[in-house]
Image (cartoon, rainbow, N blue to C red; front, side, top):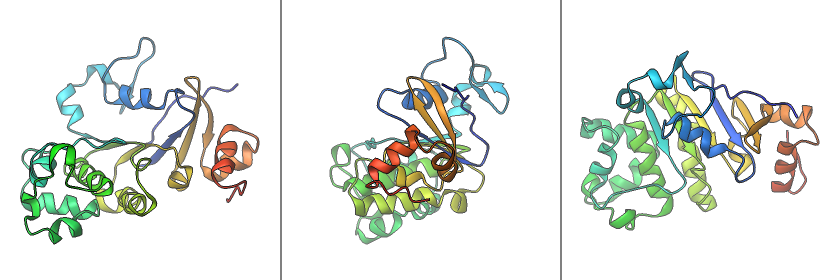
Length: 232
């Protein structure tokens, strides 16, 4: 079994796929430096992550998980957790980039809307787009999406996916890493890493993975999710 190393090119979108327990989220946690590797090293721009000032590094990293964490306060304050110095203009700009400005502006309270405990006053898709706006307001250099659409229905998934797909247009040179379960959401990724048992066993884009590994793990997943139609 071939084992590739995990390399994420600057300004590109890399997706990570694989069965549960294969190590996908571990890579995200290493990049966030929730813990350090027991062997090997994590390099950012050629520097060992352990040598970087942690607070400064994390200010450059945006994260959106499967279950967005919102606090029992206003939309404004929830987004400012991403950047305490953000002005209302910057918050509104982040909301527009996250495709969330329309539903916020429709509320009479606007940015002062109380989201409720755990964001209970908002739908799942609305909460996720607020979380994306909070990541965007940081003007991050690295964006991490950990199955950000997997808990949503098709309608909300499409809106959240639109925000994710617009990253380059909206934010410019951002290195984006996406963990995905629904493979249709990462077809256009520049590179896809396929993991199994902690190893990267396949690497390529959507087309090359289906072509070079027709009986591989990615092709199997994609065919299962698409009724045996391996659209290329």
